[in-house]
Length: 489
Image 1 (cartoon, rainbow, N blue to C red):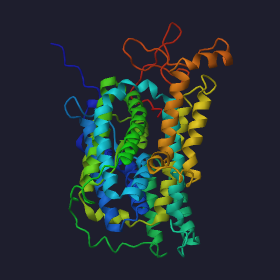
Image 2 (image 1 turned 90 degrees about the horizontal axis):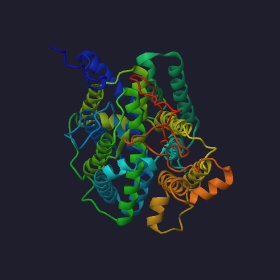
Image 3 (image 1 turned 60 degrees about the vertical axis):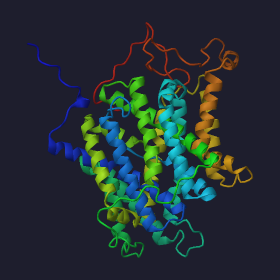
Image 4 (image 1 turned 45 degrees about the horizontal axis):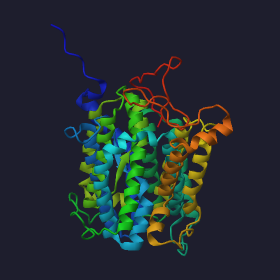
C-alpha cells in the first residue's frame, strides 16, 4: 500500500516549542511598524494619550485577526492560506488625517467601513485585472509610500509644534541619533534572532536613555486596565461623506496593489505559486480589515514586507507559524496597559525607528522597479511622472488648498496621487492602441510595450515591457519557484 503524500512545507506544523518561538519572532519583526501607524495618526489628529492607546490596542487586535484569516483561511472565500503577517498600512494615514480635519473621527471610520465592503466586492475582479498593476505600477507606489513618510518620522523627532520650547532641540536630536546608531550597530554586529529584533532593542534602549532626559511620561500606564476591549464605534456612529468614502476606496485599491506584490513574492518563496483564486481570497481579507477597522476603531491592513523578507531569510514557510503570530497579536490587543506603554514612547525614539522603516519601504519599491526595463515602452516616463506627482503634496503641503475639499482629500495624499497616476499612465502607454504609433516611431520595430500575452493558465510569467508578464516561448524556459528562495518584493 502506497504511503500518503507528504504535506507541502506550507502546511507542515513545526514542534510546539519551535512554533511558538518562530511566531514570536514574526511579531517582533512587525510590531514597531504596526504600532507606528496609530501613533502617527493619533498625534496628527490631536488625540489624547488614552485615545492613542485605544487605537494601538485595536490596531493589534485587527492585525492579529486578519493574520489568522490569511494564514488559516475561512472556507473558500477568505484568506490566501500562506505564511502571511498583516498590519496597519501607511497608505491610509494621510487621507485619514485630511478626513478627520474636514469631517471628524466619525467620518474617518465610516469611510473606512465603506471602503472595507468595497474591497470585499472588488477583490475577485481586481485579482482578474492584476496585469494592470505590474511592477512598474506597484514599485512606483511603494517607493512613494516610503518617501512620503520620511516627513512623518522627522516630525516625530523634532516635535510637530514649531512653537514648542523643545522643538528640534539638541536633546531630541541627540536621542534620535543615538537610536539610529543602535539600529546600525545591532544590524552590523548581531546575527540570527538578535539581528532580527535590532529595531525593537533600539527602541527599548532609546526609551531608557530618554527617562533621565525628561522626555518620557508613563503616568497613564499604571491607571490602565490589564484586560479590556474598546467598544465598537468608540468615536460615535459612523458617517459617510461621499468624498471621504471615495478617498478611502482609492486607498483600498492602493492596498490591493501593495498586497498583490507581496503575496506573489510569498508564493515564490514557499514554492506554492499563487493562483487567481488564491489572490482573490487574500485581497478579500484586506477588505475584511477595512470592515473590522471601521467597526473596532482600527486601521486597514496590508501584507507586511518585512515579514516576507523574514520568510526568505529563515527558510521557514509554515503558515502555522504566522497563525501563531496572529494569535499573539490578538492577545496583545486585549491588554490596554500595553497600549498605554507603547503610546508613551518618546517621539524622537519612535521617529528614529520609523525613519529606518520608512526608508526600508522605499528601498523595497526601488527593488521592485529594478525588475522593470525602464528603457522600453515609455516605462521611465510612467515612473518619473507618477513619482513627481506623488511627491508634490509631500514637498508643498498647500499646493491643493485652492481645490474643493473632495479633491484635497484625494490629491492631498502623495500615495493616492501616485497610485492613480501610475495606473492611468500604464493604461495609456501599455494597454491602448495609442502606444503603437508612439513606440513605433521611437524604437522602429521594437515591441511597443503593450500587455504581454499569457499562457492558457493566465498565470504571470516573466516581466514584459511594462514590468508585467512576458510571453514564454522556445527561447524562454520557465523558472520554477523553489522553497526557501529569497522573494523579490
